[in-house]
Length: 439
Image 1: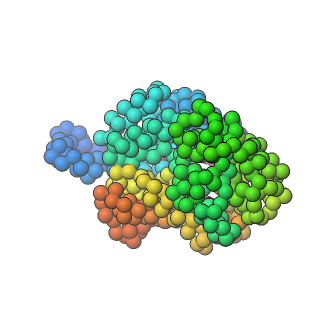
Image 2: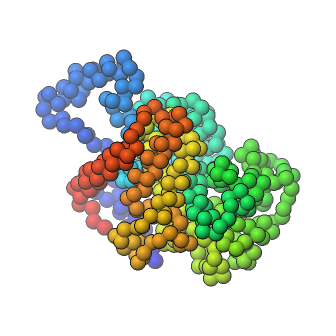
Image 3: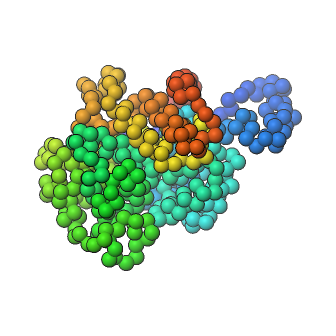
């Protein structure tokens, strides 16, 4: 049953003030003195400090808590190449999630640019203003080149969430699923349906975690990616099998994991029957997965299954990653988000799933209990502890790998995050309530 109607969704976006975000002053500007400090002549004092020491921009401006969500609307989830204007509601939504889950401010920048050179040039010019850049809904393979080039050029974190978000969340699920099944990561066989940004990034992260590259069987719309095929880009070639092992059904035989980042009904019950004992299926196509949850459980109750949907167990939801990864990266002033930071986030999520869950969170999801096991290997997005588990883990990895410019006391940092979020939620509620929005 749908949670909302089309008109309710449109009213949500258009009611009261249009859109979902607003820029607000956080300093008083009610007196002549306030005005003189906010702008001329008082603002010159901050300008002079920054001119003397560029790093002082973090002390006197919002740069350290500001992320640019940059998109050209060429690969909007479930909608395809709909352009920057039509993609803007999604980018505003991304800004809402950054604020609600981690108190990060966002400007969504929806640009008329299609080539890597244009997007790289645009993003490069943003560095003085933003503490980080979240690339969003930019089609493959251009997105790979854009992120790679920007990470080489910029000294602020650049993160293409369509790639790495799914990779990190699913990696957390794999860690726990393998613990439950008693399998070793270096021995598992993975079949991947889809060869876009998320599929490539997931596969790369799994290799960093210990999966053997030759044990990944990746399929695109033309079939298995293998060395005998023509027209493969560099990123697909990295996962090309030496020989053609046949169809998707052929490769599913004995597979320990199926990762779906493709389309509805990509696999069948007959294929699922041939998978290894206690196999993993992450069917992440939205809104309809590669195979329905109940179609799997009816024939293979031993399978550990996750989807992109919130109405079934083990939701692979990117909101479990990007707000908290950026929070940790910004707060230690990391110059990049590296593989160690991503794996640290995955491990933190995996560990959190083993912790007792408060009853009010169970009630929010309409279940009696949430306990670590086959139906609960990934924490719920509304679990408030995700912030205090992930952000410190990411910051710790940044400090240990030498990309952090600030050293944090991690115990104090976790406490400060709780205080910060409590204050942020209070402010946000006051603003939302002032518009008289009714559910």
